[in-house]
Length: 258
Image (cartoon, rainbow, N blue to C red):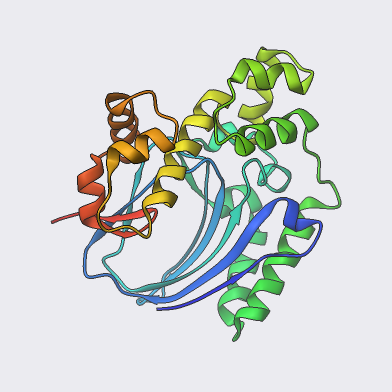
């Protein structure tokens, strides 16, 4: 499988973590379980039968299944937390744990972009198409509430160690207002955001490891105890830590045994 990655230029770099391309992905299994993440993603796929699809996946607090029964290529936009808000015209909370067709939100523009992407011959050309598409959708409006930006920065710098109450006091808005803003722009509550983010910290920490000391991981990532860690891991991953390690094919993807 050939892969390419690109971080867009300003102003998009404040909203998009990276663009990515995977060409010719052929899995030896029929399905994969995709781990939850506190971010929004757009994916364009083209399978070996010539079937194209484009979809928007919202912030997730539970895993979902991906059909890998046919080889396919994919082109995607991985947004920063809350970064998808200016581009889709709906509250991010409406996409929580959902994947919807991009046609639903971008109408005929989605098909136009999909056609351009699959007709382009180089990764560089495809990245330019994605940049232009997002700039067109934003229409010069890159509105984000400063309280959300501030709260995400505080949560991330502390690796989720700061309480929501402490962060609320630092943002200058009420707890109720911050929850509302997070639902609209991020797609999760602040508390759920911190929990999913900490779960992703665990996945990043163990990514290069074959033999994992789960007690140490739980401690370093800020879990109160091993039981709390195991509960959160199963709640988000849909399987226990040992099962995840045995079947993972990438940090956020686990093969589903037949």
